Image (cartoon, rainbow, N blue to C red):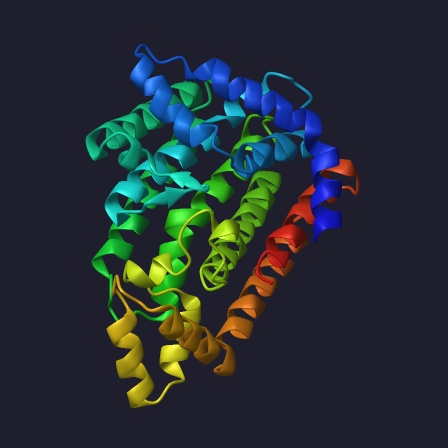
Length: 326
């Protein structure tokens, strides 16, 4: 995994540098407090994966315009806005290994800064002059909001099915990946078949990426997560490993798991026992296989493009997303 990560970083180093510069240059708030709060989430780490995907997809479609990166930061602003909002809604204490913004300042300040970043993203979308891009960004914000609302409404709901879960992560995660990849093709005015293919790539990559995150939540390693391990469990969120185990557990195990879900006082021993149950029931392996299936579909969506550096990097990124599930 380390070798693959280094291979990707070497290939996209200049793109990442350009994205980093554009993020700071285009932020441009009127008030210093907004700059501080936005900077707290934007520059505390992060892979810049979503804007990078847009740049790579645009280049795959023949775009060589260096100013493309200014449109690409739309997707990092959107992502950062959702993280600010999510941490307030979930009561998250850590984000990217540091105190969440609402802990450093206060919830209203964090929420309003998230609103500012959403507005900035929409403004940058308008600058493209392409109605298709504006429609894409608007649809992303609508679906992400609905996905979060649905997840919140189903907190602690043991009747949540795998199909329900997949729809939630499609809305809250995959649509942003899909939108970034589609926009890369749209700003290049690529043929519809290419726009759709790259949208499919982004969709399946996003689904696998979220499943990877859901597995990482059961690693017990906060250093990997940048937040407390078991956060989903404590927040009452049923993710695929738990949904699968509930389906394959006996009544006693189901009752025991139900008492853990949403509890703020899950002892380390109980959490380790849950991980053992997820492993014994094949739920970890099942989630990993589901992620593999999505990665295979993501890479298959690239098959209509000529082999070359951009397609190679996009394929490597897909493989890296899968390795994160280990």
